[in-house]
Length: 124
Ligand SMILES: [Cu+2]
Image (spheres, rainbow, N blue to C red):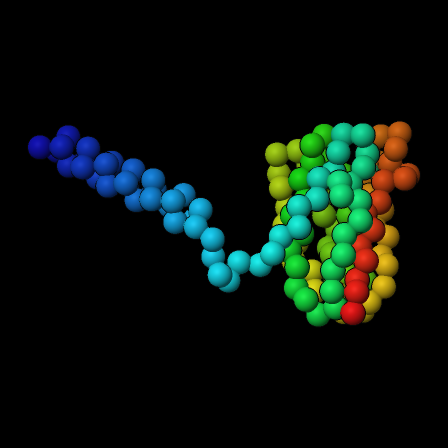
């Protein structure tokens, strides 16, 4: 009897957890647009140039395909953030001022580090 209760609880748990990916996979009307940016093993951001708009909130999702990298921008309100393989990090940005912001990699990551930068162009 006790075993069947445990099995039942286990089955219910499996059913509820299995239902989560199905509902999460549906597009959500409230979801913010996300820009995916990959920091690469050969010390580049891909893409290395993105366009945002003043007062429009945008989520940037950073992943690393190799190496540990970093970004920070006080102008755009991006906190000091490490970008590591297997640990995607999402940062919401709402630019205040139009302009072109060059955001260099903040962590020495390889021979191309000095030239590794993400350019964020903010249009009105
Ligand atoms: Cu770097």
